[in-house]
Amino acid sequence: MSALSPEAIQELQKRVQNVAVPGDAPFDALRTAWNLCVQQRPAFIALPSTSEEVAECVRFARQHGLGVAVQATGHGVGRPADDALLILTRNLNGVTVDATAQTAHIEAGVRWGSVLKAAQQHRLAPLLGSSMGVGAVGYTLGGGMGWLARKYGLACDHVLRFEAVNAQGEIVTASADEHADLFWALRGGGGANYALVTAMDIRLFPVTEVYGGSLLYPAEMAKAVFQQFREWAATLPDEMTASVLIMHYPDSLELPDMVRGRACAVVRGCFTGEPSEGQALIDEWRSWQTPEFDLFGAMPFMGAAAISHDPPGPLAGHSNGGFLTDLSDETIDIILAHSLPQDGPPPLVKAEVHLQGGAIARVPRDAMAVSHRDQPLLLSLIYSTPTDDTYEAAVQHSADFLTALSPHSSGAAYANFLSGEEQIARVNGLFEPEKYARLQAVKAAYDPDNVFRYGFGVPGQPAG
Ligand SMILES: Cc1cc2nc3c(=O)[nH]c(=O)nc-3n(C[C@H](O)[C@H](O)[C@H](O)COP(=O)(O)OP(=O)(O)OC[C@H]3O[C@@H](n4cnc5c(N)ncnc54)[C@H](O)[C@@H]3O)c2cc1C
Image 1 (spheres, rainbow, N blue to C red):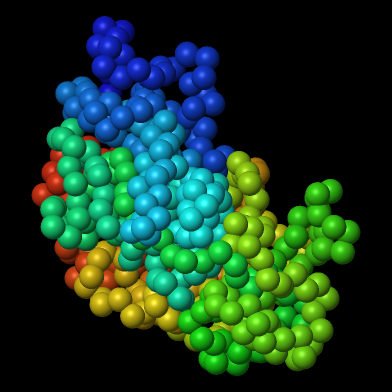
Image 2 (cartoon, helix red, strand yellow):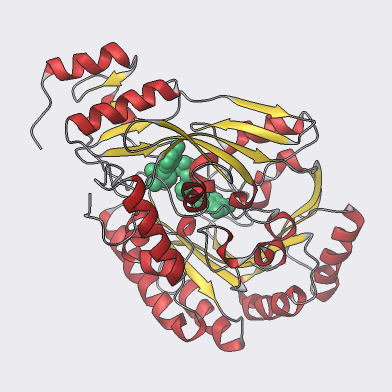
């Protein structure tokens, strides 16, 4: 692609207030994603403040033969935005709550923490994930599996409408009544592939207090903890969303002495319902074996980030994973053989098995693009990869880990828990076959020229 002339850029700057080009002072900071492993060199960057400005950007990119990449926070970049017009949505930052309708209108650049804060003022909550810093729209486009999922479902199950700019640079609405095929695709079909979402309306839920937290057991007890989780999970009501994991706590000064530099077997959970009922479920663990650290208790949902303690970042990381069909003793042995420390500190931060089921599994299969609702368990692997060596080790380790687990996995994966390169390589595994074909049809109808070519993309489209 040849560089754009200064006149062309000036033409855009007349129509869009915030545009940065290479050499501008903030350009390098702007092109930096939350995940520091992402290295991207966009042709230029626009920070629109309105849907009209977004539409101007898309029309300009078309006119000049550029692809359009979209980024809210950079937690889940698909393809790096090399040579693209990179649209940062951070100036689309409005959130309004309709307390009577129990809905929220959320603009594209808003992070979950802001939505939760606005909703809790009305004793309501969104279906956010483990981290307040993740973008609400990007998370929802990938599905959205959070601590209320077994009770209320995935975030994408509760979108009422999207406002978007299509690949022709037109402002459109996607809902059950308008552009229903686009609405179907945007609910779990992945980010930045079919249209650029400028805002979404979602349902909120009456959650203010939960019984949540984590129990830490020594790594030596890991097999027994995973086996106990399997038995316990079989009895759980939908109100409890839970996971079991091996966690490697970094050797960092911010952590208490007792966990710093150690691996632990951890049980995490969030119960929405009567706190005493949640406590009774966790008491089963306490009477099974006293945990080394017991961080469970009644808590305001505003503090739900404390359940997972995700790092605020930015960080360099690699993530991988997939759905599991069982938590048999053999599956547990494979997980532990790959996740407990061996020679020196592994780049693995955690291997977490999330319990699915409940409301996640009750939505009809063809309702929307998000797939694999019937899978019982979801594995998430997170690695810390500050150097090229650790990154390569992580990619290899996660591939070996998943190969070893293949007898206990359908091969299917969940887009939000994969790094960008994994999303692209495993796009086949992200969707059920009939949905994959339907997504191709939506892509062909809405973006035949592949303007939005930096998401993870359905096959049949030229790579970005
Ligand atoms: C610390 C951490 C915790 C997480 N916790 C969870 C969790 O609990 N549950 C879960 O399901 N996922 C979780 N995730 C994954 C997260 O949901 C995905 O990485 C998600 O894609 C991030 O969205 P973003 O907008 O913040 O990131 P971005 O990298 O900015 O965007 C992600 C993708 O969405 C596209 N996109 C963003 N905005 C738009 C838009 N307006 N229109 C069209 N496309 C757009 C981007 O192009 C990109 O492909 C977590 C990730 C991290 C790093």
